[in-house]
Image 1 (cartoon, rainbow, N blue to C red):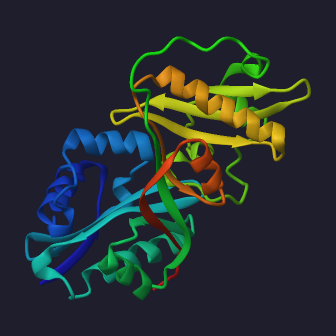
Image 2: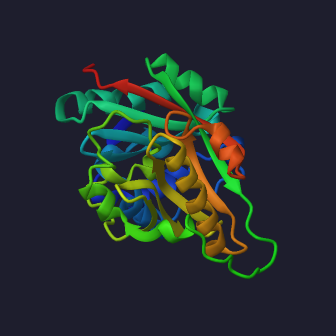
Length: 291
């Protein structure tokens, strides 16, 4: 007998077990999920057990949906069906059940980010009425090959000063109410509890902040969490100066900008700043609907 149920905060063990049991050949390179990683996802991306579901055949988990929730949207972080139980409607039922719940409780907007080459996943979401909103691309700029002497001060470099996330939030530069395409991991303003003290760099003219970025060191490289500039030559110059300064601070570590949309930052500008594109994802969206 097939059964589906939403989970509770004491179901972390069940969700971890279901996620690993439903691993398919396309997940061969995916890192394993354990309790500690699940708890870190709760903290880092607002994963909610009550937005997660498990499908059962008898007592055996055969499908699982992991959902993260914020005030304005819910993310389908992951969706897996055991290879032996596919094409039986499990993925569709998990997606439509979450949609029905959110039609009542909110928020009504749902999003997902899936690798562009995952044809089966794209078909499952499309069958439930999800639409492609944007393409997201991972970008990477290699780190310095060896340590070098710091460059001498210039008028441009002297316009650089430390800032943090709270500065951008207070200035309204990052605002969750603005219509902008941002990946879930880097949508800093949308977090219920933003990390206000995340470090950043700003490029200032005599009149205003012309360019900015927020960053942090990561396991694979130095992550750029947010960046932007005021339209115009001075803003573009400022962003170039900030990227070079961050590269100097990162040393041999690469600079990483994950899942950026072309609406957020021009791909040609990123190329001119030394970044190369990597994996592509599809940002899919839909609105919650009652069953």
